[in-house]
Image 1 (cartoon, one colour):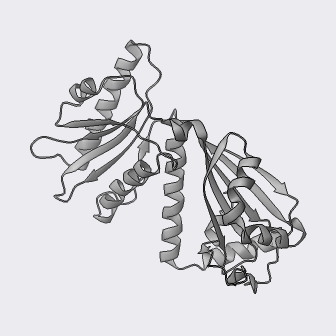
Image 2: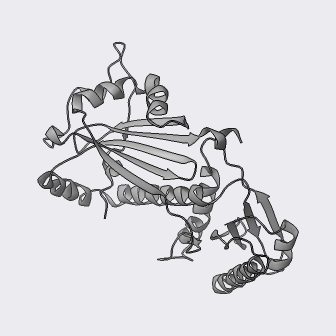
Image 3: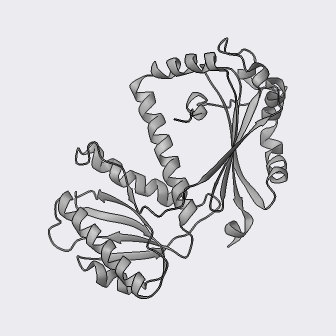
Length: 293
C-alpha cells in the first residue's frame, strides 16, 4: 500500500508573524530528519483536475518508525483520515469520468419505499435496462456511480451519476418506480467536488443508522477510468522547501502554472506534522477550458 504522507501532515499552516515567519518553523517535532533524500513531487491527473503534492522522503528505517506512529493514532483520528481518503478517491474517480454532458439522477419511490435489498435489485435492473438501450443505439458503454441514502423521514432513495446520451424523460420511464429527477452536472473550478461530497454523505448516513454496516459507501461500474499518478524526486533541501512554503500563498499561482502549462491554479494547502519533520504542500489545478466552459 502506498504510504499516505498526507495522513501525517494534518496540522494546517498557521498565520505568519509580523516578520513573515510561520510559527511551526521554529522547531522540528522529531528526530526523523528529511536529510539527503530530500522531497518528492507526486502529480495526479483526473480528467481536467490536477493535484500536485510535495512531501519529504524518508529512508527504510524511518518509514518503519512512521508506520508505528500511525498505528498509535487514536481511533477517532484514524476514522477521520480514512474518511478523507475515501472522499478524495471518489472525487478523483468522478472527475476522471464525468463532465457537464452527464447527469445526476435522483431516483425515488412512490408509495411505501422498499427495504435495502429490494432497492439494490431495482437499481441493478435500472442499470441493465439503460445499458441495453445504449447498446441498441451504438452509444458508448454505460458508466455510473451511485449511492443509496434516505431522507429525514427515512425514505430510501438513490443518487446516481450517469453518462449522457439518453433523454431525461426516457430515463424516468425506465425507472418507473416513482419520481426521477435528472439534472446536468455542473463542474466549477473545484470540479465535481460538491456532488462527490453529496454522494459520500448519502451512504454515510445509512451506515450511521446501522443499515450498511461493513458495506462500501458507493458503487460504480467497472469500466471507469482511474486517475493517473506520477512521482519524481525533487532536488530540494528541507530549508528550500520551507522557504517556498513561507511565501506559497503569494507565489503559488505563478509557480504552479509555470510547472503545469495549460492548467489554472485553484488552491494550495501548506501543512506540517506533529510526528515527523518537513513540510507538506498540496496544490489543486484545473484545465482552463474546463473552468471557463
